[in-house]
Length: 290
Image (tube, rainbow, N blue to C red; front, top):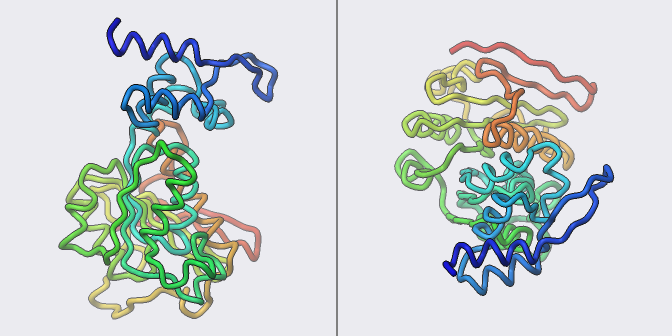
Protein backbone atom coordinates (compact mmCIF):
# COMPACT_ATOMS: atom_id res chain seq x y z
CA UNK A 1 0.00 0.00 0.00
CA UNK A 2 1.41 3.42 -0.94
CA UNK A 3 2.15 5.99 1.75
CA UNK A 4 -0.72 8.20 0.54
CA UNK A 5 -3.23 5.34 0.56
CA UNK A 6 -2.00 4.28 3.98
CA UNK A 7 -2.49 7.81 5.36
CA UNK A 8 -5.95 8.01 3.80
CA UNK A 9 -6.90 4.75 5.46
CA UNK A 10 -5.48 5.81 8.81
CA UNK A 11 -7.28 9.13 8.70
CA UNK A 12 -10.56 7.34 8.12
CA UNK A 13 -9.87 5.07 11.08
CA UNK A 14 -8.85 7.98 13.30
CA UNK A 15 -11.84 10.16 12.43
CA UNK A 16 -14.44 10.54 15.15
CA UNK A 17 -18.11 11.21 14.46
CA UNK A 18 -19.73 13.84 16.63
CA UNK A 19 -22.35 16.58 16.57
CA UNK A 20 -21.59 20.24 16.02
CA UNK A 21 -23.27 22.96 18.14
CA UNK A 22 -26.19 23.00 15.66
CA UNK A 23 -26.76 19.29 16.19
CA UNK A 24 -25.40 18.16 12.80
CA UNK A 25 -23.16 15.14 12.46
CA UNK A 26 -19.59 15.79 11.43
CA UNK A 27 -16.32 13.89 11.32
CA UNK A 28 -13.31 15.29 13.08
CA UNK A 29 -9.68 14.59 13.87
CA UNK A 30 -8.33 15.22 17.35
CA UNK A 31 -5.04 16.98 17.98
CA UNK A 32 -3.71 13.78 19.57
CA UNK A 33 -4.29 11.86 16.34
CA UNK A 34 -2.87 14.72 14.26
CA UNK A 35 0.35 14.57 16.27
CA UNK A 36 0.54 10.78 16.13
CA UNK A 37 0.01 10.58 12.37
CA UNK A 38 2.48 13.39 11.76
CA UNK A 39 5.15 11.52 13.70
CA UNK A 40 4.41 8.17 12.07
CA UNK A 41 4.54 9.56 8.53
CA UNK A 42 7.30 12.14 9.11
CA UNK A 43 4.90 14.91 8.09
CA UNK A 44 4.02 18.29 9.57
CA UNK A 45 0.80 18.93 11.47
CA UNK A 46 -0.25 21.22 8.63
CA UNK A 47 0.17 18.43 6.07
CA UNK A 48 -1.93 16.07 8.17
CA UNK A 49 -4.65 18.69 8.64
CA UNK A 50 -4.77 19.41 4.91
CA UNK A 51 -5.01 15.69 4.14
CA UNK A 52 -7.88 15.38 6.61
CA UNK A 53 -9.76 18.34 5.12
CA UNK A 54 -9.38 16.81 1.65
CA UNK A 55 -11.25 13.77 2.99
CA UNK A 56 -13.99 15.86 4.56
CA UNK A 57 -12.57 15.35 8.05
CA UNK A 58 -12.36 18.50 10.17
CA UNK A 59 -9.34 19.02 12.42
CA UNK A 60 -11.32 19.60 15.59
CA UNK A 61 -9.39 22.77 16.49
CA UNK A 62 -11.14 24.48 13.53
CA UNK A 63 -14.65 23.09 14.13
CA UNK A 64 -16.04 26.46 15.25
CA UNK A 65 -14.65 28.14 12.11
CA UNK A 66 -16.01 25.73 9.48
CA UNK A 67 -19.54 27.13 9.53
CA UNK A 68 -18.14 30.43 8.26
CA UNK A 69 -15.19 29.27 6.18
CA UNK A 70 -16.25 25.84 4.93
CA UNK A 71 -13.77 23.01 4.38
CA UNK A 72 -12.38 24.66 1.26
CA UNK A 73 -11.87 28.00 2.96
CA UNK A 74 -10.09 26.41 5.90
CA UNK A 75 -7.83 24.57 3.49
CA UNK A 76 -6.97 27.84 1.75
CA UNK A 77 -5.94 29.37 5.07
CA UNK A 78 -3.67 26.43 5.85
CA UNK A 79 -1.99 26.85 2.46
CA UNK A 80 -1.50 30.60 2.96
CA UNK A 81 1.48 32.64 4.12
CA UNK A 82 1.05 36.05 5.76
CA UNK A 83 3.69 38.63 6.61
CA UNK A 84 3.11 40.66 9.78
CA UNK A 85 5.41 43.66 10.14
CA UNK A 86 5.36 44.84 13.74
CA UNK A 87 4.69 42.47 16.65
CA UNK A 88 3.59 44.96 19.29
CA UNK A 89 0.12 46.27 20.10
CA UNK A 90 -1.54 45.48 16.80
CA UNK A 91 0.83 42.75 15.70
CA UNK A 92 0.51 40.60 18.79
CA UNK A 93 -3.27 40.34 18.50
CA UNK A 94 -3.13 39.90 14.72
CA UNK A 95 -0.65 37.02 15.04
CA UNK A 96 -2.66 35.33 17.77
CA UNK A 97 -5.88 35.51 15.75
CA UNK A 98 -4.30 34.29 12.52
CA UNK A 99 -2.62 31.37 14.27
CA UNK A 100 -5.92 30.33 15.84
CA UNK A 101 -7.64 30.59 12.45
CA UNK A 102 -5.07 28.21 10.96
CA UNK A 103 -2.89 30.34 8.70
CA UNK A 104 -0.21 27.97 7.40
CA UNK A 105 2.78 30.28 7.71
CA UNK A 106 3.43 33.56 9.47
CA UNK A 107 6.45 35.75 8.78
CA UNK A 108 7.06 38.09 11.74
CA UNK A 109 9.30 41.15 11.41
CA UNK A 110 10.07 43.36 14.42
CA UNK A 111 13.37 44.68 15.73
CA UNK A 112 12.13 45.78 19.16
CA UNK A 113 12.15 44.13 22.58
CA UNK A 114 9.48 44.45 25.27
CA UNK A 115 9.61 47.32 27.77
CA UNK A 116 7.47 48.27 30.77
CA UNK A 117 5.30 50.63 28.71
CA UNK A 118 4.16 47.72 26.52
CA UNK A 119 2.44 45.95 29.40
CA UNK A 120 -0.81 47.91 29.10
CA UNK A 121 -1.76 46.59 25.65
CA UNK A 122 0.66 44.18 23.95
CA UNK A 123 -0.60 40.61 24.10
CA UNK A 124 2.81 38.91 24.21
CA UNK A 125 4.20 41.37 26.74
CA UNK A 126 4.33 40.20 30.33
CA UNK A 127 6.56 40.88 33.30
CA UNK A 128 8.40 37.68 32.40
CA UNK A 129 9.10 38.75 28.79
CA UNK A 130 10.45 42.25 29.49
CA UNK A 131 13.66 42.69 27.52
CA UNK A 132 12.82 39.80 25.19
CA UNK A 133 12.58 40.07 21.42
CA UNK A 134 9.02 40.73 20.29
CA UNK A 135 9.44 38.64 17.13
CA UNK A 136 10.96 35.68 18.91
CA UNK A 137 8.42 35.82 21.75
CA UNK A 138 5.65 35.86 19.14
CA UNK A 139 7.12 32.76 17.50
CA UNK A 140 7.07 30.92 20.81
CA UNK A 141 3.48 31.91 21.49
CA UNK A 142 2.32 30.85 18.02
CA UNK A 143 4.03 27.47 18.39
CA UNK A 144 2.15 26.97 21.66
CA UNK A 145 -1.19 27.94 20.11
CA UNK A 146 -1.07 26.08 16.79
CA UNK A 147 1.58 23.52 15.90
CA UNK A 148 0.32 23.51 12.29
CA UNK A 149 1.39 27.12 11.78
CA UNK A 150 4.97 27.57 10.59
CA UNK A 151 6.68 30.73 11.89
CA UNK A 152 9.60 32.74 10.58
CA UNK A 153 10.69 35.28 13.20
CA UNK A 154 13.04 38.11 12.21
CA UNK A 155 14.38 40.26 15.03
CA UNK A 156 15.24 43.26 12.90
CA UNK A 157 13.73 46.52 11.71
CA UNK A 158 12.06 46.03 8.35
CA UNK A 159 13.09 48.52 5.69
CA UNK A 160 13.20 48.98 1.94
CA UNK A 161 16.41 46.97 1.72
CA UNK A 162 15.44 43.81 3.61
CA UNK A 163 11.65 43.58 3.35
CA UNK A 164 11.55 42.35 -0.29
CA UNK A 165 13.49 39.20 0.63
CA UNK A 166 11.71 38.72 3.99
CA UNK A 167 8.22 38.96 2.48
CA UNK A 168 8.91 37.00 -0.69
CA UNK A 169 6.46 34.10 -0.89
CA UNK A 170 3.78 35.71 1.28
CA UNK A 171 0.21 35.93 0.01
CA UNK A 172 -0.47 39.25 1.74
CA UNK A 173 1.06 41.51 4.38
CA UNK A 174 -0.37 43.22 7.46
CA UNK A 175 0.91 46.62 8.57
CA UNK A 176 1.21 46.69 12.37
CA UNK A 177 3.79 49.46 12.52
CA UNK A 178 3.82 52.66 14.59
CA UNK A 179 5.62 55.19 12.39
CA UNK A 180 4.99 56.68 8.97
CA UNK A 181 8.41 56.23 7.29
CA UNK A 182 8.27 52.48 7.92
CA UNK A 183 4.66 52.31 6.74
CA UNK A 184 5.49 54.11 3.49
CA UNK A 185 8.47 51.84 2.90
CA UNK A 186 6.32 48.76 3.51
CA UNK A 187 3.62 49.97 1.12
CA UNK A 188 6.24 50.49 -1.60
CA UNK A 189 7.72 47.02 -1.10
CA UNK A 190 4.27 45.41 -1.24
CA UNK A 191 3.64 47.25 -4.50
CA UNK A 192 6.89 45.89 -5.91
CA UNK A 193 6.03 42.34 -4.81
CA UNK A 194 2.41 42.57 -5.99
CA UNK A 195 1.05 41.96 -2.47
CA UNK A 196 -2.06 43.32 -0.78
CA UNK A 197 -1.23 45.33 2.34
CA UNK A 198 -3.72 45.58 5.18
CA UNK A 199 -3.01 48.89 6.90
CA UNK A 200 -3.99 49.58 10.47
CA UNK A 201 -3.35 52.44 12.89
CA UNK A 202 -4.67 53.35 16.34
CA UNK A 203 -4.82 56.41 18.56
CA UNK A 204 -6.70 56.58 21.83
CA UNK A 205 -10.11 54.99 21.27
CA UNK A 206 -9.83 55.53 17.49
CA UNK A 207 -8.67 53.04 14.87
CA UNK A 208 -8.47 52.91 11.09
CA UNK A 209 -7.96 50.11 8.57
CA UNK A 210 -7.55 49.99 4.80
CA UNK A 211 -6.94 47.19 2.30
CA UNK A 212 -4.27 48.58 -0.02
CA UNK A 213 -3.95 46.93 -3.42
CA UNK A 214 -0.44 46.77 -4.90
CA UNK A 215 -1.43 48.95 -7.86
CA UNK A 216 -3.36 51.48 -5.74
CA UNK A 217 -1.21 52.99 -2.95
CA UNK A 218 -3.21 54.93 -0.38
CA UNK A 219 -0.91 56.08 2.41
CA UNK A 220 -0.04 59.38 0.76
CA UNK A 221 -3.73 60.10 0.26
CA UNK A 222 -4.35 59.34 3.94
CA UNK A 223 -1.35 61.11 5.50
CA UNK A 224 -0.09 63.46 2.80
CA UNK A 225 3.35 63.31 1.16
CA UNK A 226 5.85 62.03 3.70
CA UNK A 227 8.68 64.20 2.42
CA UNK A 228 6.60 67.38 2.67
CA UNK A 229 4.82 66.80 5.95
CA UNK A 230 7.93 66.02 7.98
CA UNK A 231 5.68 63.92 10.24
CA UNK A 232 7.10 60.59 11.34
CA UNK A 233 4.73 59.64 14.16
CA UNK A 234 0.95 59.57 14.04
CA UNK A 235 -1.53 61.06 16.49
CA UNK A 236 -1.16 57.98 18.70
CA UNK A 237 1.86 59.61 20.36
CA UNK A 238 -0.49 62.22 21.85
CA UNK A 239 -3.55 60.07 22.55
CA UNK A 240 -1.78 56.87 23.56
CA UNK A 241 -3.00 53.31 23.09
CA UNK A 242 -5.44 51.98 25.70
CA UNK A 243 -5.64 48.19 25.82
CA UNK A 244 -8.94 47.69 24.00
CA UNK A 245 -8.06 49.68 20.88
CA UNK A 246 -5.32 47.45 19.43
CA UNK A 247 -7.40 44.35 20.20
CA UNK A 248 -10.36 45.84 18.33
CA UNK A 249 -8.44 47.03 15.29
CA UNK A 250 -6.31 43.88 15.06
CA UNK A 251 -9.56 41.91 14.84
CA UNK A 252 -10.61 44.01 11.84
CA UNK A 253 -7.23 43.51 10.18
CA UNK A 254 -7.24 39.76 10.79
CA UNK A 255 -10.81 39.48 9.49
CA UNK A 256 -9.94 41.28 6.25
CA UNK A 257 -6.96 38.94 5.79
CA UNK A 258 -9.08 35.84 6.36
CA UNK A 259 -11.76 37.01 3.91
CA UNK A 260 -9.16 37.64 1.21
CA UNK A 261 -7.29 34.36 1.73
CA UNK A 262 -10.40 32.20 2.05
CA UNK A 263 -12.09 33.82 -0.95
CA UNK A 264 -15.01 35.26 1.01
CA UNK A 265 -17.11 38.27 0.09
CA UNK A 266 -17.20 41.65 1.80
CA UNK A 267 -13.55 42.69 1.62
CA UNK A 268 -13.08 46.40 2.28
CA UNK A 269 -12.90 48.30 -1.00
CA UNK A 270 -9.46 49.44 -2.10
CA UNK A 271 -10.34 53.14 -2.04
CA UNK A 272 -11.99 53.11 1.39
CA UNK A 273 -10.59 53.94 4.80
CA UNK A 274 -12.61 52.37 7.59
CA UNK A 275 -12.62 54.44 10.77
CA UNK A 276 -13.82 52.99 14.07
CA UNK A 277 -14.43 55.37 16.97
CA UNK A 278 -14.90 53.33 20.14
CA UNK A 279 -15.59 56.42 22.26
CA UNK A 280 -18.63 57.47 20.24
CA UNK A 281 -19.51 53.86 19.28
CA UNK A 282 -19.48 54.77 15.59
CA UNK A 283 -17.78 53.42 12.49
CA UNK A 284 -17.79 54.79 8.96
CA UNK A 285 -15.94 54.55 5.66
CA UNK A 286 -14.19 57.43 3.97
CA UNK A 287 -13.27 57.38 0.30
CA UNK A 288 -9.65 58.23 -0.33
CA UNK A 289 -7.99 58.87 -3.66
CA UNK A 290 -4.30 58.78 -4.47
